[in-house]
Amino acid sequence: MSLVAPCQPFALYEQKALSDLTGGMLRPGGVELTARAIELSGLPPGSTILDLGCGPGHTLTLLAGCFQLRPVGLDSSASMLRQAVSANPTVPLIQAEVMAIPVLDAGFDGIISECVLSLSGDIPKTLKEMARILLPGGKLVLTDIFSRETAGPEDSGIPAVRSCVTSSLPLEIITAAVEAAGFSILVLEDQSASLKQLAGQIIFSYGSLETFWQLFMGQEEARETCCALQGARLGYYLLIAQKKED
Image (cartoon, rainbow, N blue to C red; front, side, top):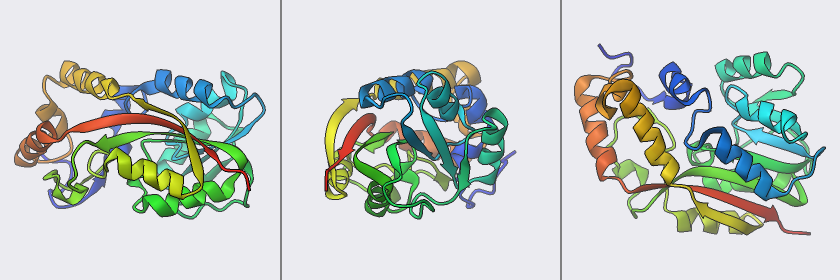
């Protein structure tokens, strides 16, 4: 039985099955990749950092606890923020869209955004908004899906599922948009092995990828989704950039 009408788009990152599977991290790579990204960014303790698309708040906990940073969380989902405030009661949280961040210019030393940029709906506009709120020399930390194909997400053949998979773009388009927004790229790593690891977790937990997708859609839509994903050439990147000095 389908939990969602076949033609109704839904947000995969808000589904409990994915949260349970990933320990709440809601993305490939988990806490290990987040920790590596922050270490590579070089942000010193006490730095202000915005977790853009903070979800249930696991990265906020890591930022404040392990790295002694001063995080602020932002997410468009009220249900995600309810979980985040429960886990991080002293961390400021904002409900807003990533393309219109309600904070002053040049207010943060860093931004981290994990598997969120591709969901923004307008990557160039979102990156310019990120640049606006960063101090000159501030660090931008991104992890996300990218496509090894030239076809856009509308050609993916995947049913109406709102996820970073269905919104993926070629890496050269992403890096060009980052630089056009006023950043210099410092680190760019291929972290695609984390995608295979996540697929392995799904198969181990549910028996097959198709069974996992049937949690969210009908049997035929799940089969079509698996076929489309098998044909897609997807990767996962870690990117660290610095806002250029004025």
